[in-house]
Length: 86
Image (cartoon, rainbow, N blue to C red; front, side, top):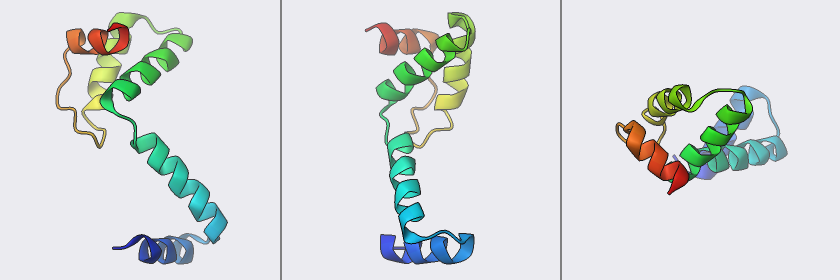
């Protein structure tokens, strides 16, 4: 399915206009366009701000990363720490 066809499908089936589709599409691409490194660092910061501690953060990131489109495979706690801190 090409983008134009996808846009017609979404706007017709979900009752949104083309402007709303464009904003949603850009947001979707930005969210799912993150690299593994960008995602891990961003998510680590979000979870720290939420008051989580690193052991819990590492477990959450590990499970979430496995579901992302970049298909990181299974990240170990060590790999996650290295992505965050270098």
